[in-house]
Length: 152
Image (tube, rainbow, N blue to C red):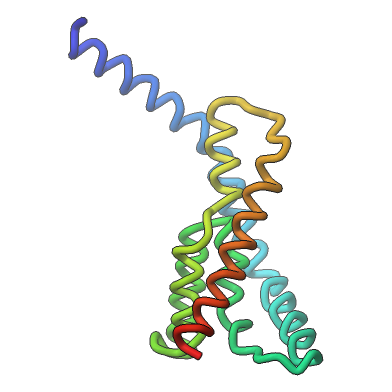
């Protein structure tokens, strides 16, 4: 086996795969930008806050939910939301700490599905979305409980 030729063939294949996934990446980044710029994220968070307050529950976790809602779509978008949460409320605030926990407890589900499934040409993702989102919800709920347990 000629190691150099094998390396060149692998590099060509990797470059072709990178070219294939660019449209999926662009579409995902545009969708995230539209979602944030439209105010839909803020509207969703305020609606959830009203529901939580109507049940006489602690609403401090709502301030970290933009990170949790963004994470299935984009890791960098969620990171930006986490930084924004920390700048607004403080890095040592409950919301700042919860945002950090959420970052480590969830996955970029739609990004992974779009990029990885798209790069290999899988069109029918069947149960992957449901399973991925169920895992994200479990991670978010667990992160909230852990934050209240450790940081009150």
